[in-house]
Amino acid sequence: MKTLKTQVAIIGAGPSGLLLGQLLHNAGIDTLILERQTPDYVLGRIRAGVLEQGMVELLRKAGAGQRMDAEGLIHNGFELSLDGRQVHIDLHALTGGKTVMIYGQTEVTRDLMAARQIAGATTLYGVENVVPHAMKTAEPFVTFEKDGESYRLDCDYIAGCDGFHGVARQSIPADSLKIFERVYPFGWLGILADTPPVHEELVYARHPRGFALCSMRSSTRTRYYLQVPTGETVEQWSDQRFWEELKSRLPAELAETLVTGPSIEKSIAPLRSFVVEPMQYGRLFLVGDAAHIVPPTGAKGLNLAASDVSTLFDILLKVYREDRLDLLEKYSQICLRRVWKAERFSWWMTSMLHRFDDHDGFSQRVAESELAYFVDSEAGRKTIAENYVGLPYEPIE
Image (cartoon, rainbow, N blue to C red):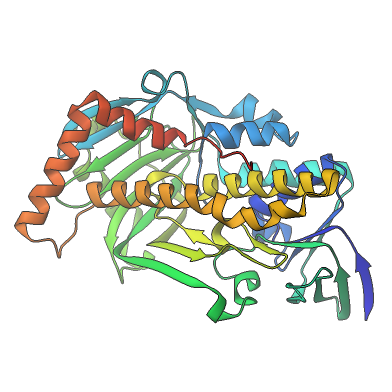
């Protein structure tokens, strides 16, 4: 078995692992990233595209924000279409000037990959059988295989940035974790198309037939979603059926201007809320989807991962520069405070905008009244806006 050494071993080369690696590398802290997939597979994942201001600033801090700033679309607000009635949520005005950036997760990942390559930092792709060891000691290590060779990676700390199905969380004894979960009785059917957006801002549509979202990746590439029942398959949805259903859930004036075209990607994502506590086990730290999942309605998944990265980076910087080992045990509690606020907002957006077939008449009317209160009140719209642009990152002390 060959032995390697680094300061921080990072499992997973998605955006959270790459972002953490870049921040640490720029601070002079050695990292090695292990990824079981190929670079092309990682870049093939079609995910979120709404970046909170905090994540935008973090990408700039990592030196990976140049293309985002050149090509990303700054949005000052978004539209709610509520059974045909349109309500504008002015993020900029309601939050004292904050905005969001439309820039696809694939592009974020591509930029971070390029920055890491330029920096000369190491990412090993195509690794297998990754296993963290001795996490409760001062000398943790990771074993893995690559190209038929066995390796041991000695390190000071391990960051589990390998997603919901990754090995990091599964390496923690089950009796050390508490799981909180809610699975929703529907999914999102999403398509990607090279068509101009139907509106200059995102449109969240509530309709008796179900929820719809008009999003975008650029001024020429769109991402649209429909709420579909659990159990639906992509094969049941031709492009024509998708476009017709989307038009039926949008206000007439938008439906008339919708430009349709062949889909270049089509998939169905289940919706769930998931949190594991704590987000650390000794010197193993869970980051992003390894620790929490939010339904995509609030555009929080990637952004929550970024705030985890920011917290862990700030702590490790103090540990290496000032020997502040006492801060390590604060990681989970700091992250979880923000995680649960984002979980609440994502749950609320999901509950307010989707059709729930199991709701009785009373529950349906209460949900309608609650949403009406929020959108008809400036205080309510401000609450929506400040959650949507992202709550502030909490200092580590």
